[in-house]
Length: 87
Image (cartoon, rainbow, N blue to C red):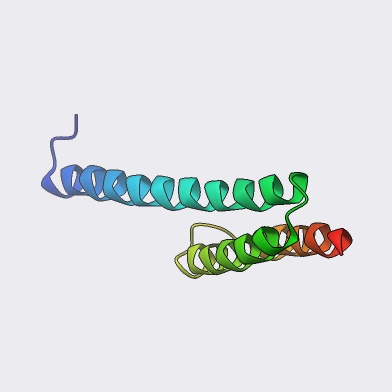
C-alpha cells in the first residue's frame, strides 16, 4: 500500500476510472451481441434498431476514451455490412 497521500489518491482515482470503463465496455459488448443475435434470427427490423443503438453507444465510448476511434469505426463497419447483407 502506498504511503504518500498523492499516491493513495491515484490508486482510488484509477480504480474509479477502471470501474467506469469496465461498465461502458460491458454495455457496448451487450449491444453488439444483440445486433448479431438479431442477424442470426434473421430479424432485419430488430437488427437495424440494435445497430443504431450499438453505434450510438460505441461512439459515446469512443468520445470518453474507452475505445480507440479506429476500433469503433472497424466494428461499426463490420456490423453495417452484416446487417446490409440480410436485405
